[in-house]
Amino acid sequence: VLAELFEKFVSHLSESRTDCYFSMESYKAMDADVKKENLSSVQQLGVEMTVRYGKYLNLLKEDAEKGLCFVLVNCEEFLKQQQRTVVSSLCCLQEHCAGYDWFASSIFLIMSGDREKTLTFLQQFSCLLVSAFLWLPRLHLSMHLPVTTVEYGIHPVYFCSAHHVEMLLKAELPLVCSAFLMSGFTPSQICLQWITQCFWNYMDWIEICHYIAICIFLGPDYQIYMCVSVFRHLQQDILKHTEA
Image (cartoon, rainbow, N blue to C red):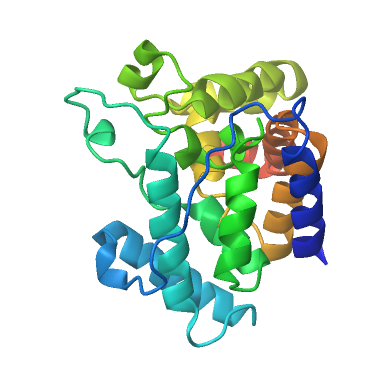
């Protein structure tokens, strides 16, 4: 039901000029015979984890690995069309791919391992503003960002969403904010980790689905509220650890 709702909602928005923040790029999927060896070692490890998790949730079948590899390789090629060449010594800017694509993997699971549906959805989704915040590889080396921003190698999620989380924490949860200051960590570092991984390894699957759904249906600012609500939920534990 959620997969169908996502498809209809995003398809409807992508057909509206006022809702399309980025231009819709035409792309034809590569050959369906994509092997795991076509991916980097980090991506291969991510594929194994995703397929194992998908089978544990009874969402994927035995041949799911090939389908996920097909999606990841095509996403990389599709996003390359909107990337700029940057000369930089930063390791994060040396590759066209920004680590493992947790968002595309989440959508693959939501679509029950249907690679065509997943790829179609991601192509349509890529023209919406919310894609810049949920799908982090979307803006990696992106031509949609100023050259100086790209050269710094800092993703907009860090200086937009994570920054606003810190601003809200000061007002809403001052004790949590103080605890982070004392620890030498910043809440924005933790938020970037959560968002990059789509909350994998932090939340149950149904909550991950809710997070993605809330941000798509209600707007990218709900990513900020979601992070703040998690900090509120963890407040007692954070304060207990600070005292210890």
